[in-house]
Image (cartoon, rainbow over all chains, first blue to last red; front, side, top):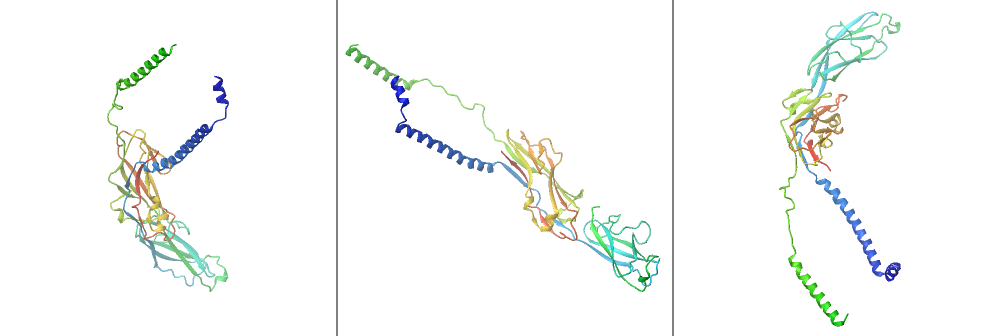
Length: 179
Length: 180
């Protein structure tokens, strides 16, 4: 018993150190193996099952979209007097694809600025369509419609407008809209 | 103890050891098959497609290649899909892959939004909220379900942007993929 106690109290000999080194070496080896195993494990994630089927091999094509306008009835705006109105009828024809609606706007270039009122349809009757507002109706691909444009020189037009002229441009914008 | 006696005991012990060593060749043994239950069977993961139907704004389209989409249009593919996800612990995800790999006109690609939905969805598919569905494992193929791939042309596309353009859908795939 006494001999065993004295052996325990002794510092570890060279053999014990070798064993400790070997254990540390083993620990490093385990750590290396674990580290090496991680990439292998991560790599294994790439090998899970999968199945695929094509959705479609088709091409999807967008259409074209355009508008052609003309005066069906040209408005003669020469020599207008205060309080007087003149009408013109514009024809709008869609080219391309899709259903559509339209907006109208007006721009002036010159001192005289008559009031411009738009009426959907070939006559200037019914509910007017405000400038910039979307037409109440949706039109088919390639359809043609008319817009009546009423030019009014206000009754209270200033004297400075006498003998003057202006360019009044009406712009039609067609917009693709689902029916 | 006398030397003679000690010597006799040592010889006897040596003889016993030899006898004991010789006896290791005759120990009893028994064995059983490790797996008596029979074969081990792996699962199955598969996708099968039915006949697709294209619609434009809800109206069936006979030939999608003849369609010319415009802003605001919704072009939809309804594809019957049969999902097989057999495996006791199989975890898998159903999705439409390749939306980022679509090729064609850049402006039209910008204007198109591609989404994927499963009709219902069925009880075995859980919407992950990111356009993918978690598929529960089963013991047989599920009944076909309609998978909807929808292409929406941004209605705010201005002027004549993306007109007369082409996008190819061949990179789009239904994908059923196992994950760990």
